[in-house]
Image (cartoon, rainbow, N blue to C red; front, side, top):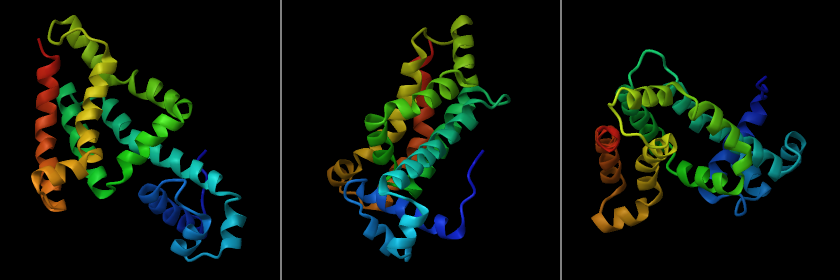
Amino acid sequence: MKKEYSETEIKIKTAAKSLFLEKGYSATTTRDISKESEINLALLNYYFTSKKKLFEIIMLETFHDFISKMVEVYNDEKSSLEEKLELTSSKYIDMIIAEPHLPTFVVNELKNNPSSILKILKGQIMESKLIDQYNDGIKKGIYKKIDPIHFVTNILSLIVFPFISSPIIIKMKKFNKTEFNEMMYERKKLIPEWILKMIKK
């Protein structure tokens, strides 16, 4: 059952999430969170006993939000595999443009805490309707027979990697932030096309 948070707790969590995403766990102090949330340190410690506990809550919630968009799309009974690819690309690019520090945060936590999220990935992604549709397409001779993990990894990589490497891309192309985002909007249409070319016979 999802915990209900008070208005003060939500204020603290919102401030902490912003700081953790931007600066990371180590560089963020409880004093930073106190200042950002405009909540005194004693009250912050009352609601959340430690920075580590607060971080764990935010990390799990952030990762859950990140994955839930994919799960919702991947398990839709009515949409085709092609439609699922389009929706995944569109939703994730919009999500990351709104929170540009999100990919680095998630990747770091995937590396640092793999066991805490392995169950989510294995159960909700690798056993999804999307994978069923992909395997069905293999049986019908539509798609190449490869391990579905490559399929899912390619989708995420094409979406997430440009955001992680955005400082290099921006300098290389002499983009401003708006121009980089326009490039990512263009990828909404390109990514599903590339994925389909990879898997189709």
